[in-house]
Every structure is written in structure tokens, then in C-alpha cells.
Image 1 (cartoon, rainbow, N blue to C red):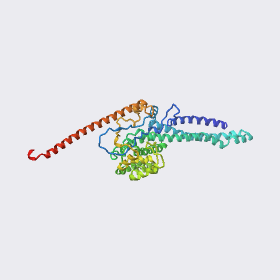
Image 2 (cartoon, rainbow, N blue to C red; image 1 turned 60 degrees about the vertical axis):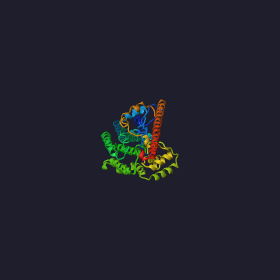
Image 3 (tube, helix red, strand yellow; image 1 turned 135 degrees about the vertical axis):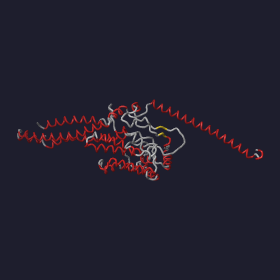
Image 4 (cartoon, rainbow, N blue to C red; image 1 turned 90 degrees about the horizontal axis):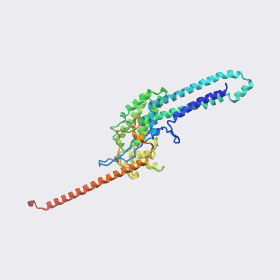
Length: 439
């Protein structure tokens, strides 16, 4: 047996495991040039509502409706439903098992190779030994052979574990618990929708996952859920929609909630390391601190940031952005319960009032469950079809006509009412001119 046999053995092992790992990773990566559409983490993030400026109004008006959730491709939605939490845990356990066994396999092959080489070398002539050692039988060649097979498999497996952990955390927070967390936290009023109502749900999910996952992967999965929870908290602050408006008195309660969320994952020393959780929560803490600043200060920071970029008020991509980023600062002003901020956003960006939108959560929403709603099943693309666009335009025209009709009725009402008041005033004036004894 020579090194070519070792090379053939490692090649078979490498290509078999590499093909299996590639198939698993393709479930979380999209290849738009292929007919196989896979699921990636960005698919489960909710569609950010339009940004508005804070306003309070008691005047009845026809409000615009918000679309909850993200329209998914039918194949993506189907595969997302297949990637349930138990199945993700099984995949993670499988990847962890592969990583362990590859190391054990490498050690076993190296040991066996070391045992057979001395007996093989004794049957060779001295010249053949020198030639063999100088070409392929050196320890450096064997190490290089393992480096191009087993080491690559271990690195690929580690990367796959990282991706599946990240996807698991994002799915738990942004898909399974979005109704209880993203669409509930601080909606309408901070005091009545605190974070404490969300913790029992995530605690149940964590207990379920910890009962399925390998102990060596527990902290990685919990960290991914912790990271996704903090990312979701920032989403509520910056992209929470018209129903989220924060006053100075709210900030103290929100800071307490963030501390409770951090303590939940530390779990009195039995969970994640405190220093790690603090590092993960740094961006959320800094984002929340922006709401404590005076409105003038935030506006000044925004104007400075706008000098360096071409500002476009649109929904930013999911993920962390800089604290002094214009997108972040605009959204801080949008969710400030402050007249000065609202006035600035009206003059500078002509943003609509938050009271123009109906931000009431839908009772029929299925986004928070593993099942996909009928709306998602009917959707085949991210864009409105032509028929849908024409229908939307027709509805908008009807609303405009209805609004115009309401205004005409109101105008007619006040015209008649004003005429009656004027006639009444004339009669009163005439009566004042009549002597008292003639009344």
C-alpha cells in the first residue's frame, strides 16, 4: 500500500461528505440562475412599514391600510415551512456529528498509516526507499493530503453550523414569534405592551430547542436567538411603523425592558456569558440612547450625516447600520413623540402623519405560525401583477371619489348651517331694535 491508495481513500471520503454538505447549504442559499429556489434569512424579515411623522388627531378620516408581512415566492414559502425548528435541530446535530467523526476518522487513518509504513519500507530496497521518500511518502505530503480533504470538510461543516444557527435564531424571532414580539411590543402604548409578555414564549421555545440540540451546540443556538431578539428589538425602535411613538417618559421603561432581555439570556450565570450578551446588546443600547437626546441634537446629527451621502428616505436593508447613519436618525425622529421632530420631517421630507395609517394588527395574520397564509400561497413574486396594479388603482380612485363626496357633503352642510346662523343673527338684531313695550 502506498500513498496513492491513501489519496484515493481520502478522495472518496471528501467528495461524499462535500456533496452532502453542499446539498444542506443550498437550502439556505439562493441561486437565481437555477430552478431550485432556496430559503435565506432575509426572506423571513417582515416588510418595514412606511415611515411617518408623529401626530395626534381626533378628526375622523379614511386611513390607509398597512400590509403585514413579506410576500414570498411560493417555493420559498413551502421550503420555509419545511425547515421547522425540530428539523433545523436535527440538521445541526448531524453537522456536529460529522465534525466530530471527521476528526476521529483522520486520527484513525493517520495511526493506521503510521503502522503500515514501517513494514512496507522494510520490503523496499534502499534506492527505492530514497526515491519513494523524496517523492510522495514524506510526512509533509501526507499532511498536505489531509489538509486538502479532512481539514476542508471540517471548515465547511463549521461554516454550515454557523449558517444554520443564524437561520434558526432569525426564524424563531422574525417568523415563529413575530406576532407576539415584533407586532406587539410597544404597539400603541409602551406601558401596556412591555417586553415581559414576550419572554414566556421565547422561554418555551428555548426549552424545546435545548431538549433537541446537542449540548455542544446549545450556546451557539441560544446566542443566535439572543442576537435575533436584539435585532428584532432594534427593528421595533426604527421600523416599528406608525403605531410606535416614544416620549421621554417611555425611554426609562424601554431601558428596563432591554436590561430584562439581557438578563434573560444570562440566566443568572447559567446561560450565556454576561460580557458576550453586553457586547451583542451594544448596538440596541446605543440606538435606544438616541431617543433620549434632544430633538435639536438629533436633527443636527442628521444634517451632518446627509452631507456625506445622497439621502433617500426609504426602508433600509435588514441589518445593523451606523448610529450616525442618516437612515437611523430619520427613523429616530419618526418615532419620537415630539412636535418639533414632526414639523421638521414635514418640511424636510414631506412625510405623512402617522394618524393617516391604520396600524391595527390583523386577527387573521398567520405570519407568526409555521403555516403560511393563503396570501403567501397565492403570491408568486415580490411584485404586484398587472391585474393587481390596475385593481389597486381602481380602489384608489374609488377612495378619492368617496373622499371628494364626503368633502362636498360637508361643504354643503356648513354652507346651509352658516346661512341659518346668519338669518338667526339678523332676526336677533331686528328684535333688539323693537321697543320693549311692543314685544
